[in-house]
Length: 426
Ligand code: AMO
Image (cartoon, rainbow, N blue to C red):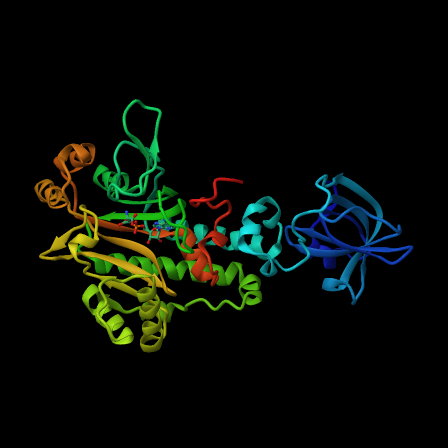
């Protein structure tokens, strides 16, 4: 569109003739004049039209006219419209949502059922601007440290994280599934000699329950690295990633963060994240609930984060040394404790990771402990038949991380088109 500028650029074009394109957010008819608030990807601008009626809300328009200063207009400038062109008008009659209203007054189900429209709320759309910045700084941090980005297949012949929670596909004439994680492939790529890899990709879990923390399809930020000595190095790496993301968000999303009253952890706070063994974590929960804690459930995660905030000044912690039965068969171990960890951030597990078994014979023995058979993971086992360096890695759930960075109540708010037990469309 020639001469097109964006709503936040009016101040640089006073007295010039320009075009603004966008959606009619709302309009106010004052008889001979109509004030229109136009919404575009950068914000809102006031248009003054010399006509008594304009188009319906959410119509898509191109408005050409002169920019003038007006202290009463949002941002201090407005467009005196000479030509108003309708590019597309809604045909739906009454819209199910009022985009100039407050999305907080609409229930989550209605927001998700009308997702194509609810994504137009600036307060909802900006969640995905933040998410894009999270992805950007994750990838940038990894690349800067020599990690190679991979994209592995999501149609697979055997589960990676245990038999439950697998989506089956009926196509190949033999069992096929949607990948629960890129676990086997990222390890294979370490063994291929790439040594350091990361992947941003979809992961599928046939979760039976509908909760504020589970999706059937989520984006997994996966990391795998060879020639490391232990899980401490992985936790250090995760702190580096979280710090790069928080710094990037402060740089690129400061307006959004301020408007939402979000304070992100500082570098110093991230370095103060405590590291507790599974046993120590259970004891902290027990002290708070005054009874035996048998596992770290969502309430336990909340209590642990609260404890970390009080004792260490950051609502986050690492829990390591999980017992073997709590971790997948591929997890490295020493005696009864595994060399694995979770990161719990603001009351929610956002990461699981650990060292992997890299000796063929140890893996075989692990299979029998987990009642698995060689044929269940025959392809995976070949990685270790050919020789594989000591290695480990982790995966951060993108939606959970976004949810917690922005203090969202439900993970579905951090998902463009969430899939859950009751939701397959839009
Ligand atoms: P895990 O199964 O714990 O570990 O998943 C890692 C992280 O992915 C996110 N996540 C989910 N997010 C939304 N909905 C779900 N249903 C869901 N399931 C998992 C969480 C979780 O912490 N292969 C290992 C990782 C590794 O060891 O490298 C794995 O997938 O944020």
